[in-house]
Amino acid sequence: MIDEDTQRELLRQMIRARVFEEAMAEVYMEGKTPAFDIAAGPVPGEMHLAAGQEPVAAGVCANLRPGDAVTATHRPHHIALAHGMDMKKMTAEIFGKETGLGHGKGGHMHLFDPETHFGCSGIVAEGMPTAVGQALAFKKQGKGNVAVAFFGEGAANQGAFHESLNLAALWKLPVIFVCEDNAWAISVPKDAATAIGNNSDRAAAYGIPGALVSDNDVTEVYETAAVALERARAGEGPSLIEVKTDRLLGHFQGDAQLYRTQEQIEELEQRDAIRRYEQALVESEVLDSAEALEIWNRARAEVEEAIEFARSSPYPAPESALTGVFA
Image 1 (cartoon, one colour):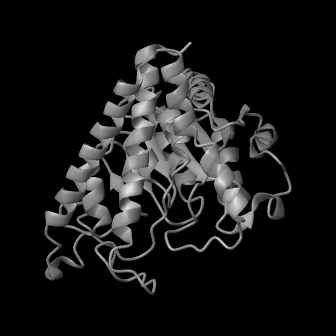
Image 2 (cartoon, one colour):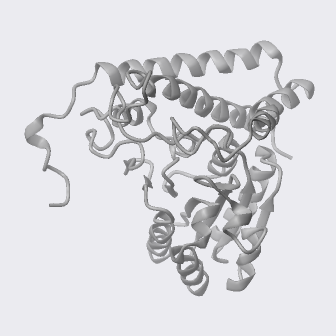
Image 3 (cartoon, one colour):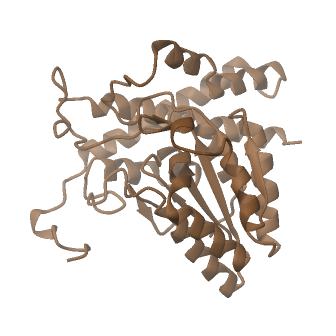
């Protein structure tokens, strides 16, 4: 049974991520209309938002300890925030500002934060072998830390997925593989690209546990991750967790979503996991409606402050373009 403080914290983390994403969706479109111009506005380039997938990040990361490492995908904000990344520095990086995590040179798909041991990449499945390497280091150091690799269901068809699971299982490394199955690899439905219904079943091929969370439920994610992490910290090796989650928005901002019907989009919105969890906590008297509203209001204030910090921060000096990058 999850204690009430943890339940409230799970809701808070999900709301923080949702408010941040909603604000970024609005900021991102500045200057990009009426004709969509991906290079215009304060945040040029692509923007991949994870609204709907918050239970995965909140449920897993609530079990992590300082020193644990996390790798994420091109859709990373909810995971980064749940793992403790500084929202101001992250936002400044997204805006391409000097005060950002990578001094504005990485952008939203390449967030890197040594303080929280977090990294992500726009390359599909890239974070999986990275997490395996981190887990190998943790095992050799004997620190008891764990690495967690978040990835999408499309990445489970990449060679890096199989290579990472094989090596982690062979060496019994303290790493957890978390599949965010939102049913769409860009515009390709899962059943048109993947021969197996549940990627968690693939764990059996490597002799490791595979767990399926089928309802985008943060409580079940939390409890499932707790078991896997306890096992990893005890030296029993890796686990694979698959969560059937929802991507409420398009693959990227500006995506017309012609591959999904309006009915499908509306159905996703109606089963919003955050609103369901909030309602459940109110009904069980873990918090009341006023307390829930206060969580939303505090998140909005935090996000507004982070965006203002990013807007007011300077751009990197032109002469620093080749500093801190591979040449």
